[in-house]
Length: 289
Image 1 (cartoon, rainbow, N blue to C red):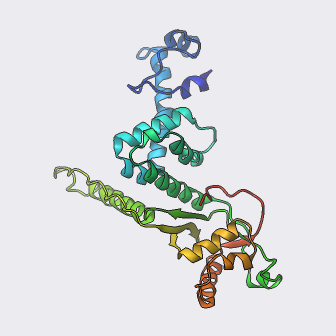
Image 2: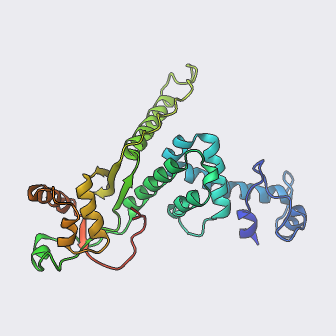
Image 3: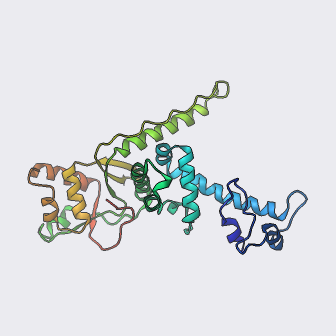
């Protein structure tokens, strides 16, 4: 009963709902299991917990989606966030998974992000990929000896589950980097001794990214988050490997104009980054292309 009350969506005024789930007065229901005190009624005490729960979720989605907030603007972002959290309530013990269904929700409810729905989908995909890269599963890395054990026509390589390959219409990586840099600069400025004395300047919204096809791998290395731009042919190779094709078929997917020296260079880099693991059937979260 307490869990149901705490997780009820807030009213538009950020208060506890006036009615219980069966239509009874919330004040009457609250009095059944929450004691009043000399300052607050049962309803008001319950409202504190209800608001704390939702404000924590609002903080979390804001922290996880700075790029989406910058792309949409404050009002559309909070309209989207409230609708998403109300219709797709948290079902996980960890806030890490809070935005796991946000991409699909945006696609299914384009009116919430119009006229920037396409951009919003790409930013949300990119920001969820960061979460996956940060703490996604890491499997034993394949070595050169593992490659030599099978011919290319039979060899299948898996990509580390924490890697997400993104084929984007906009340079979302540089956009998100600029947003984060701006947030860091604003935070540092607000903590300087002279910050209180000077009048706050209105924050400039970052310039929205223009159309420019961008292929990027979001991954981690030595426990740090990275974004790596990929040549279109290199992207096709990795995508084919991710889809379970043999090494020979994956290299063929690069196209006839790609030179062996280029392929060798790409694989040398990917091996150094530890991107390859044994191929498996386990679904990889956040790996949508």
